[in-house]
Length: 218
Ligand code: DX5
Ligand code: ZN
Image 1 (cartoon, rainbow, N blue to C red):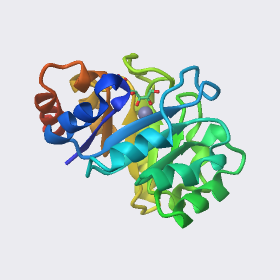
Image 2 (tube, rainbow, N blue to C red):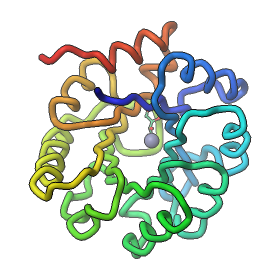
Image 3 (spheres, rainbow, N blue to C red):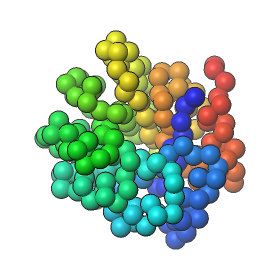
Image 4 (cartoon, helix red, strand yellow):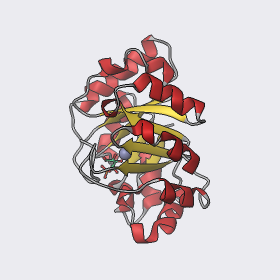
């Protein structure tokens, strides 16, 4: 069954613990935490101190999505703060192979993210080294954007590369996920759905999460 990772980017930050507890109680499998630096993306969000505070009060796996320049400067801090999966963008560093090894050595599961315009060929020589690939289905920076339909082919192609190379790499999708697009990305091969606004803007997050997990095939 597909897993659901609510993104706290759409949460009420003045009430963050309650917002995390809400999705934890509602059946979230992972907590997706978006870290933005105002350079790699135009928005600024949170850093390690907030993550380590939440770590003490949540037992969910933390799926930390770094949208920052020069991520090698900070990966250790984010792992110490409590990241279980640490995702770095291939566009954000010139030494992605070394960064993946560092994340493993420091004790987290390494994942790589691709912006919508970045080709899958950037993964050719690192695919067997990662736990997960995050396919961005919007341009990163903000919640509540519309899903980019062209990314369905990208997910399908990635899935077929993983299968043909006999790997166990998971595919996560992030951006514009709702019931309609979830069904499409699951059919294309997604294993983990990130959803921010669809969950946090709903009066019934548990219902949204359970529907996303149990979508009938089209
Ligand atoms: C966008 C972030 C996403 C965002 C998704 O840059 O990486 O995780 O929170 O938000 P929705 O689900 O509202 O598109
Ligand atoms: Zn994200």
